[in-house]
Structures are given as C-alpha cells and as structure tokens.
Length: 126
Length: 207
Image 1 (cartoon, helix red, strand yellow):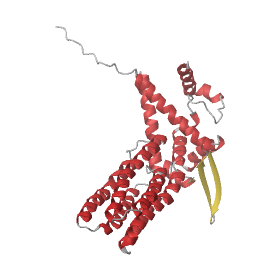
Image 2: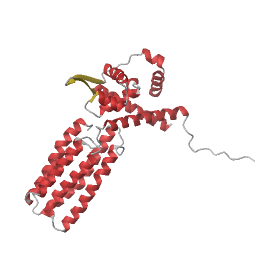
Image 3: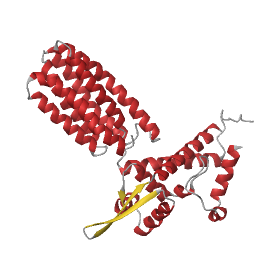
Image 4: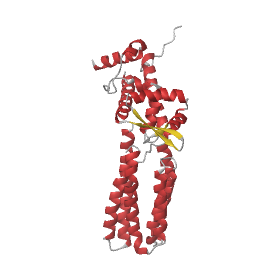
C-alpha cells in the first residue's frame, strides 16, 4: 500500500498539470518527493548551503555557473518555502546578500536523500 | 540448422526502472559533486578529534606516572594505535550521516596525503628508539603529524591545515625545549589542539 501511495505521488509529481494546482507545505512525508528541491539549480543551492554556514549570492552564482536572474528566481522560491534564509547587508557601498540553510531546509535535503536512496534500493531489488 | 539462444541468468530491469535508478543515482552524484565543489565538507570528524583529544589528555597523565621514558613511550604507542581506530569510526559515522562515500573526492585525497608523513613517523620512531634518542620522539611525532594534517588539509576546509601548522609549531617547541618538557608538550598539543579545533569543525562542518 505504501509503495502504491508513493507511486501515485510520483506519478502526480511528474504530471505538471496536476502538480501546478497543488500548493505544497514545507513539511513533507518521508515517501513524498519534494519537487521544490528536485529542480537542479535549487537542489544545488540547498546542497552547497548544507556544507557551509552561509554563502553569498556571488559564491552561489559562481558555484552553480548560472545567471543573476536565474539564481535569484530559484533562491526566492527556496526562501518562500523557508528552506533558506537570506540576509542583506552592505560591504562598503556594495550590497551583499548572504544565504544560509534553515533547519527545515536541512530536513528537506535529508528527506530527499532518503527518497533517492529508497528509489535506488527499490529498483535494484526488482 | 537452429541455434541455441542464450538467456541471461538475471533479466535486465524494465527500461522505466533502470531509468528511475539512473536518475536517482545521477541526483545523488550531483548532490555529492556540489558539496565537494562548495568545499566546506570535510571527511575529518570534529567529534572524533575531540574524542582523541580527551584520550590524549588521559594518556599524558598515565604516561607521566611512568618511571622511565620507555614506559611513557609505550603508553603513547598504545594510544597511537587506538587513535586512528577512533578517527576511522568517527569518519565512517560522519560520512554515513552525510550520505557521502567515505573515500570519494576530498576524503580519498585527504587519506592519500595524510598517510605518507604518518608512515615516515612510524619508521623514524623505530630508528630513534633503536638509537636511544627517546626524548626526540615526541617532537618528531608532533612535527610529522602536523605535516600530515597540513598535507591532508590542503583538500579540506581551511581550519584543518591551520591545525596542522599548530601541531608543527608544537613539534618545534618540543624539540628545542628542555627534555623533561616534551611529554607534557605532547599531551598538551595532542589533547588541547584536537579539542580546540575539533569542536568548531564539528559545529560548522557536518559533525
């Protein structure tokens, strides 16, 4: 039953039409794929922040090899879900944006890792 | 003429399953590569270092109660065998918690760079012991352990090579101060530095 439930969730998550209408809460069940961090750039941001106290916007941009616009859009989505926290300050006259991973962001990454491992185990056992 | 068909013992998984498996593997590899590129994950366990530091303090007290330099050296040698086991256990735990393979990327580089000075240290211990230069052993240990940490730390977070430099400095102090001090400097350095650096590593770099 649990497997069927997970399969249904996966099927729904892969369907952009159905997925678009569902607003997901930050906290998720262990067997549910977190679409918010499944996207590559967002997954990269969360992974990089998981091993650093904080990273600046330019650090992340360099690391992810992406554009300002792309990074800020994805970072904002993670911020809205409270997976990352953003602090803005000035270094001299230059504005500086620092990001750090929140506790719920770290839990989301752990759940995502568990989900990937479970998928690998399940497909290997079949 | 009819040819016998060869059937694989285990049929390959259906394409959708192998594709799911591949995607999951790819995602895990992406996470690992990003963490490695972000450069702040260290396979070195901060809590393992704290445990070794506490043990080193206890060992230095036990070594201080010995009447002879050989007796003190034997106590330290026992801890030299125990410390790597503690660190390995702590590193395996840390890697499992982070779901990172222990010997991938930075972890492998750390071990490869860390090992040669340690092997040299073991050989020099034997040579110095045979030559009766027991008082030089603590300084040599600290210098070579520091060298190993600096070399391994080049592939780790910045705080690790800084710790290595502190061990090297303690080694120099030990070699150029009165003979009676070397045991205490060894205890202070192995105990104090491991604890002092282990706590921030554990807090800021994944355990």
